[in-house]
Image (cartoon, rainbow, N blue to C red; front, top):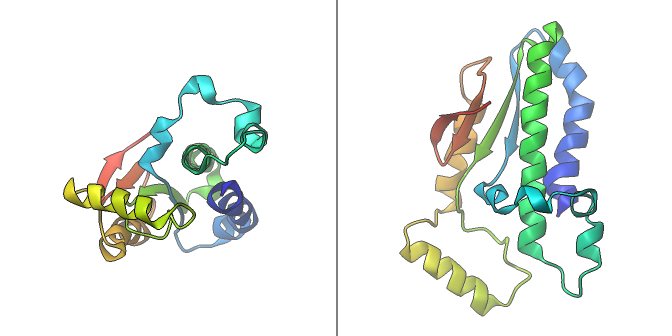
Length: 164
């Protein structure tokens, strides 16, 4: 999960950033984050938790905690990349944006018993929090189609929020 949600975007961005910086056309890096990063307390952020060593020692794999950590890492990467891009003259045509599509009905809970995922999605739907993928993708598309050189913005469930 850490590889998919954090390391993959990190490596891809590292490889593509020089090309984006050289392009005369405004470009952007859009990272899909999650509000669940807020569940990680500062007391829990250690080298062992970030590297995954802590979780590998447990008797059962804590999917939710690993997901939360991976999204926290991605958000921190986005903040740092945003900061660095703002400091470098050649990066002025590059925008860095974080997006939180909200609670979207996906197959993220495929590893847990189907009765539990059905219950979780049913509760989220009753609370009015669950969105279809078609609705959830709107904030991602808003970020992708936003005006060039958008600075210090975070798209959350189709709303533009200031960050940084």
